[in-house]
Image (cartoon, rainbow, N blue to C red; front, side, top):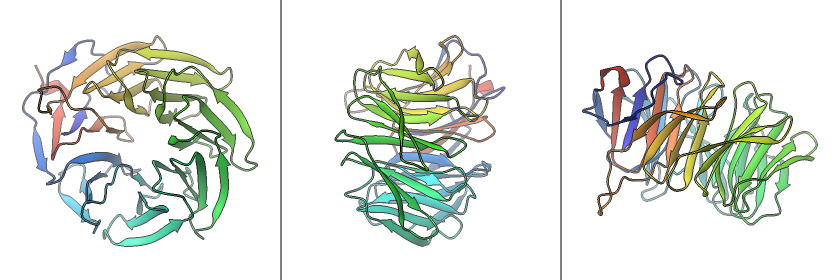
Length: 321
């Protein structure tokens, strides 16, 4: 399912016990399985992607704002809002498609990538869009012109995650070999290779002020890297791969989602788990469905989680038992 959890006191609110999700305060049927979610930069909207679907909703009311004409059965597994909130970018064969976030109409295509990118990331100023994929390269486009600005080879066969630093000076990527690589965007110089994961890395997230970079991987850990020292704080608890990682706006807490069907909120400073939320969706064997997409609203109060089911659900934690 898609859960949106409003955390009392913000994303880092203390809560040591696992939560059992009671009846939601709102349920919005999506009609298609949700596989990706992202908030707009101002937090007033969120976009949800799935197989053959891409929609934008109003955060406060849950009403539909825009319904993009995605091809039937076309998977929307990643999506990202532009920093000004006017566009949503999604991966397509050979590049990225841009959508008007207000009207839902196509607004351009960026080409030159081989196959479908596995992840996309806007630079903080919106000038660049980076795509990472199965051929082992990161491609950075100039959004205004559609031209390729830079191609960064990773030397590995698959790149699952890419993200820009808050000052846009560096871009980080990671994938199949478990290493996290950081480049200077202006020169294309590789400045760091961070090693510690024992399996593929699936997601990356910079802290809002930079300096820290979180990674989640197949080995079931979240690692928070100090980019000044290359040392990592290891957050352990997931029983299975970590598919999603996102820094909360306070810069001190991290949310992660994994194959064990849980979302966990961590305090970085002492590597402590603060909250665990369980998915209500179950597979045919009764096991919790994997969490494959999470997003935190810009004000740090709302956590959106996609686990492949067809409903949008909203919870207020202070109303739960």
